[in-house]
Image (cartoon, rainbow, N blue to C red; front, side, top):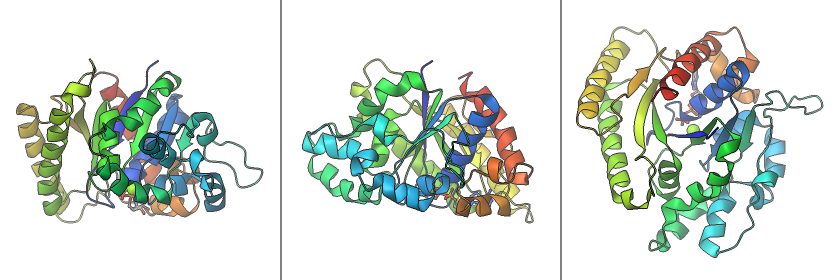
Length: 299
Ligand SMILES: Nc1ncnc2c1ncn2[C@@H]1O[C@H](COP(=O)(O)OP(=O)(O)O)[C@@H](O)[C@H]1O
Ligand SMILES: [Mg+2]
């Protein structure tokens, strides 16, 4: 196998990037036997905190060589301290009693708040191919996974550009409202410009593209959401036709409904599929997982 690496991007926060990475990752690991690695690239470290007890996370990344931060620090400084085997937490989450693995197929490369300090340093070093660092580091492990999910910060700065470059495809989690719609157009444009600028570095790899949208926080309030999804669909059709996004890009169904069990599962440090297996959220992610796999395995 060679992992499909997928960057979950949007320069809006709170649109479900982390929720999708954690819950879709856990669902395809649990129900479909897929081997999944989540890489936490956001200084807010939300996917690490969703899947780990905060004490376990803090202790683990107190040695920064066991976090995603070290990948970038090594490249900037010219050291080789990052050790994938030591850094990756296997079979997350862990049970509260005894700490045994609850999902044998789900691994996590945790983030650190120190990721915040990298942007300036990467910027100072613009002549180096700063956007390649993550790809170069993850490449040897691609054969160990079916999917590598990159949980990005809500921006398109240097670390996110590393995620874009490492990715085979991008997925845009999206909360349907009027303002987000123009945001999506700008995002698609910026992503495509980035890929254009680095196309000489892809070394025979297919140019990555945005290939799916996932709607989160869906609520049936009046027609606001329905209208917004229709407009998103129209925009996707136009962007597909002009090759700005992958020609098979879809808005994956079902739309993930707002469910308090999903919100609650964050403080339990469990994906919703383990916290509340029969909840609406769990059901939506289970249905989404089927369509997600179908889509990405046939692209
Ligand atoms: N389907 C859902 N139902 C209820 N709350 C959700 C749902 N999805 C995400 N959330 C909550 O919304 C917040 C923002 O989602 P998150 O995935 O962290 O966004 P992002 O990573 O894009 O910033 C999280 O705190 C999470 O608890
Ligand atoms: Mg997030």
